[in-house]
Image 1: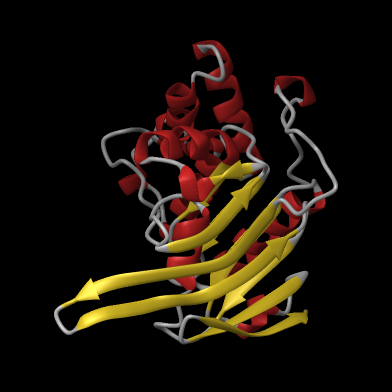
Image 2: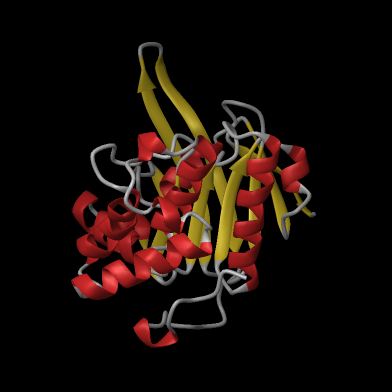
Length: 243
């Protein structure tokens, strides 16, 4: 199981409320033909240690929703509370600092920096957040790569490892600052079935250790492994079910 590196490295404030609490979320984009409403008053909650999957067809609003929750984009209206922070009120700079401490993000296309080694990619968020000393950054980075079973590639550039291995590096980077929440947007979309299953086991291990995982996917087989499934269509939640 992928456990916490050290409980003494800092703890999140605990309460009895939801870790993610979204209310009346609306997102409009201005296009050539006028306003396009991507989200239409979405309400969503996620508990601590939950494996929540958001699914739906292309254009349903899945990526828009997670971009709002992670502070990567601004909502038009509504509220987004994550770990007690009003994300909808954060400016770009404050959102980046908050995200570095609270939310790990895994992108479908990995988004690793090509000129940095695998280890340097993982330690970069720690350096940005000033959370660990340089020695501790290296120790934790190697620890996370060991948990992902790719420590032997620590000093290689991303281009020297496979796509599946790059995705494991991306997950290790997302967990660098031991965030209580991991958000993954179609993280297995470009992976073969064996590698995808391996990455999913990592997510399940994180959930077992208390991390909340919010995963966007088209894959119904992946959805079956979740604690709860949210189905989006045309910017609205059209179904919620236990997997």
